[in-house]
Image 1 (tube, one colour):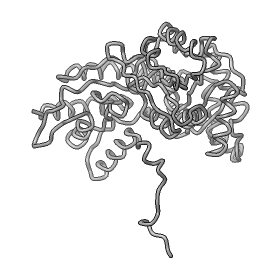
Image 2 (cartoon, helix red, strand yellow):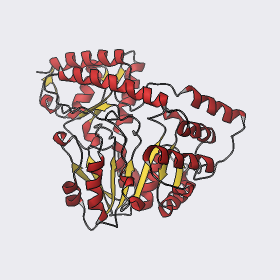
Image 3 (cartoon, helix red, strand yellow):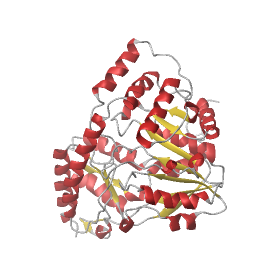
Image 4 (cartoon, helix red, strand yellow):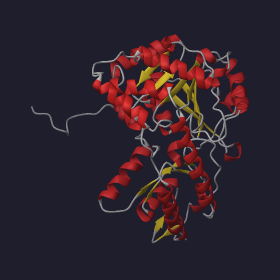
Length: 403
């Protein structure tokens, strides 16, 4: 008997997690653009800069030098040494190559770590707002995301008391980012020290610290929670090249962790993808060990855009927004528009508002619900200023129509 689509059955795993809202909105924007609409994309977290020339030259050289074969699962030794060099130079952290696992993007690094640490029923404490993939990876692993709301008044950062309250006998991981996607919040050394003091008393809990936006920091030196010796062995640093080096398409992330976790992540990765792309790894060595000026110049441009975007948001009635200290997003509270309507279309929530802005203003944004903050929406300023200003004019005009 020939099988048909009606007789096939998909895995129940697919019902346990959601499609990333960021990718969904980008897809809807592309579909609308294909129909002829002039859509301005403020949804994706992708720098609008080209990869620096010296890194591209390293990739070209790698091709000419025939780096075209399978790579070690954990990454080339000299790349892992380069990661250690970077961690010492930028973060004053001591790691050895055996502590490093290189992956196909920081998303895979996160997946490896969560799958290595979380069993069915284990709890993972995540301050909200959080990157959309955190909670879904926990669900894929069979774990339970414990979402802890934070406030705009505290710049969307969790404090020690909130962390202590969220921890239970089933807690196995604390997962957070600094700088944060989507809020742009950046934890200070003092704030991280207070969290570390709580975690010191819970030796069964691992800490996953997502530091992918490290270089896009507008307030000073990046601080890592791994700097505190009493918890360092339980910290898994996640980082990569996409944001700070404008290398999203190259797909390279890495972790720094104790050898037990590093080996566990290597074992998992060995069954999923094996080693990361050979050419990308050679380019990564150059990115991590040479001139950071292009990255710093890019951050300076993001800072200029941030200032202008904050001005534009201040002109929108009803929106409230904390100025981001890092990353390239603003995350305003927009619930003043919930319940408003136009032509019979009622804006019940942030999802509705994002769809309204997409279809009416032709501006793509992302609902805050996906990030654990349902009263907000996320707008990227990783786009050129001319398009950003045009987008906010459209947004203001569309919002004026809501009665």
